[in-house]
Length: 212
Image 1: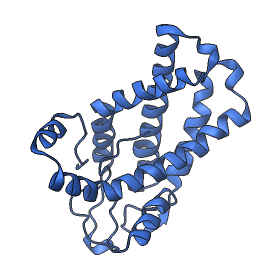
Image 2: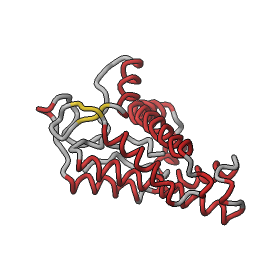
Image 3: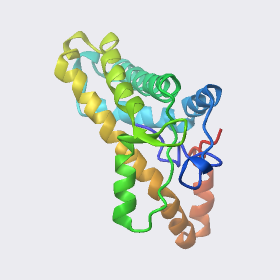
Image 4: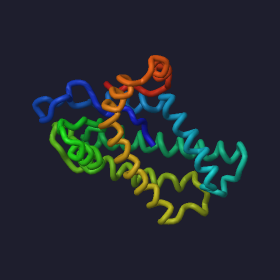
């Protein structure tokens, strides 16, 4: 899964409509991909997921112990990085779509939640207009198929390929919900949290907003 930061929100994109829209070049989309590739959150998230998968007995053919955990960690990182490269750089460049998340300007909680959850299906083209998010769906499908190259042979069925596809879409929908509401939660936390907790939060390896 990706960072719950306000990822994809870029400069010059705070208002709706093509007239206020600043597209990303292919070079900027690649820089956006690199900025998340080396984020400490990427490795912490992968380590947590590998630990969880091993505890739940996921991919049993990888075995146990540190060797099994290392294989799960490698597979998780391969999943994450390959999808980011395919979806956010390669496909978004080829299909002329924007990989960033643009916060909602709606006011009600339900409207904002609905907007965020549907961004897996709706994105912006490089001309600033809304369009079906082909990069998201094709990226999730291509990555799920690519997993057959390194997951155990017993886990390469059609069902095993489609499960990650659905999981990727659900994960991105959840990620967009977090991106939409994280600024509000941070503001609330900083307003009421003790100063010691605030200082601790500043030291956490939470990635900053992706602005290219």
